[in-house]
Amino acid sequence: MPLVLVVEDEPAIAESLAYALRRDGFTVETADTVESAQRKAPNADLVLLDLMLPDGSGFDVLVAIRRRGLPTPAVIVLSSRDAESDRVAALETGADDYVTKPFSPREVVARVRAVLRRTASERPAHDHVSSMLPLQVEPERRRATVRGRPVELTRVEFDLLACMLDAPGRVFTRAVLIDRLWGDNFAITDRTIDTHVKALRRKLTDAGGEASWIETVRGVGYRVTDQPIAQRDHEPSR
Ligand code: CA
Image (cartoon, rainbow, N blue to C red; front, side, top):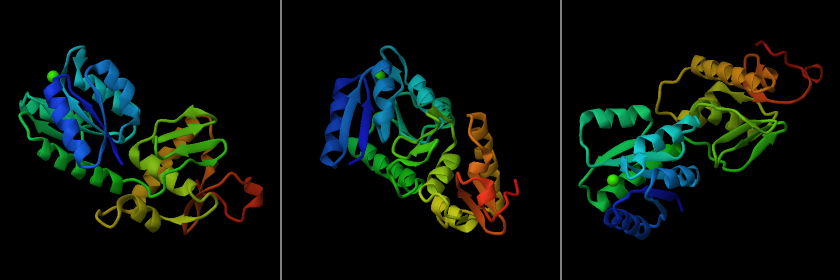
């Protein structure tokens, strides 16, 4: 069951949200300060985030979550302030949705479901550690490392890498990668994939890895491999 972290310092609101979420089958944790929210957020699938907290602003929590460069956890901002500037700031900082107080817990649960449905469809199907040492990805934690060092990737870069690392050595056509990452809902071109692969290679190289780990298979697509070039039939074109 998805884990929802309710960050809210007003006990009555926190309790009513926790109750409604648990009744709907969610696992719930709560936090009533910025400090405890920062600590618990990385384990959550979704964070319901109050903006005015006793030790600071919920925006600080949101910034810290998104600084990791990962799309998870999803974040829905809760605030009594309904100023448009707050709404815009929250969404620009990386919130997935925004609910203005007063709200009904049922409404919030419906939003939670909608956001989780949307973000789940944006993730690869498999959730386990995939690795081609010294390159590792942990899809559940949205974490990628090169020789143990974390690499900050965008959502697309991470999903591309996780998808290909799921079957090291296997060639993925651009069409398959587009389908896995975006489904058939968007007009994504092959060029989009190439651009993301280029950025991904640069980040892996910057982290001490090899650009050749993501091999271009001419006329076909891409694959991840740690086979020395001499043993391969294909010649990396980039
Ligand atoms: Ca508050």
